[in-house]
Every structure is written in structure tokens, then in C-alpha cells.
Length: 81
Image: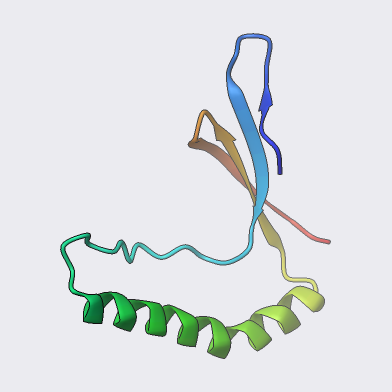
């Protein structure tokens, strides 16, 4: 979704959160093996959970809509459809 600016110059963004975000921040001093392990874990997590996520959304589980103001989350709401 594109960002929009209000008359005061504040940037707003509204988007749908596709999946939960995990705080697995990659440390820049990690070795290549740690990075490959992290990427493998994330890929495996997506491959295993995607079918269940897709079926749940198809059956009507709510989406999370995130509202951001200048990059800071100011609100979240759940919607269907």
C-alpha cells in the first residue's frame, strides 16, 4: 500500500499484516552459518504453517490491519474478507 501525507506533512500507512512477525533479528556479527540456519528455520516455518494459514483465512479467520503514522504503529484492527 502506498503511504499518504496529511496536510501537516505526516505520513500515514494502512496495510494488512500477512503473518505474525517474530523478533529473530539477525546479528550483523553472526557467522554465515548462523545466517543460513536462521533463513532455513524461517523457510521451514513458512512451508509447514502456510497450508493451515491459507485454510484458516479461506474459512473466515480475521486479518490484522495495521495503521502506522510516520513508521510508528498507532493502531491495529481485525477485519474479515
